[in-house]
Image (tube, rainbow, N blue to C red; front, top):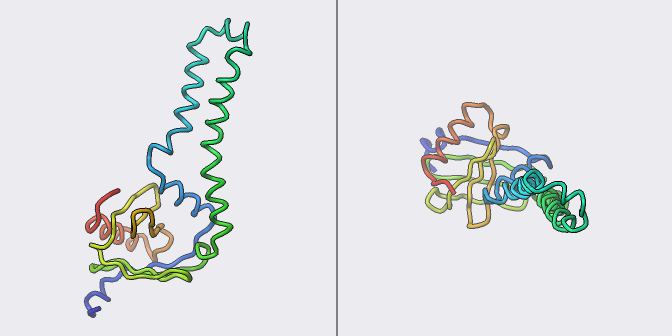
Length: 171
């Protein structure tokens, strides 16, 4: 790497917390999956509000199984991703270890306990930006994650985002 590239490097380093890992996991889900629980809950509310509540109150056992099934499904869709993230956090020591790296005009560098790599921009698959989480995809289903607190200053975070947005396409 040339001296000019080193001068334009934006370094980062950090160590994840369990809450951040959960936030990263949920940010990686396709958008539709984040809305499914709300869809089911709103369907239940709409059915209860628009249905003839006299019939529902008079014969609750006729409608109860379907309502309970939809309610259980909505609760499952809220709880399952969080439980999966917690299990991933507990079973993956590498995700809890400190890491570091840098971004530059030539690409993205990542060094961690169980993984490292130098990725030129054209070898990366894209990025996904969610509230204070930036995922940079190094594979179809593998992402490197960046949070604002991993950078020395807010200006470095902004510069890193600009580099990623300029060199990669959204996913």
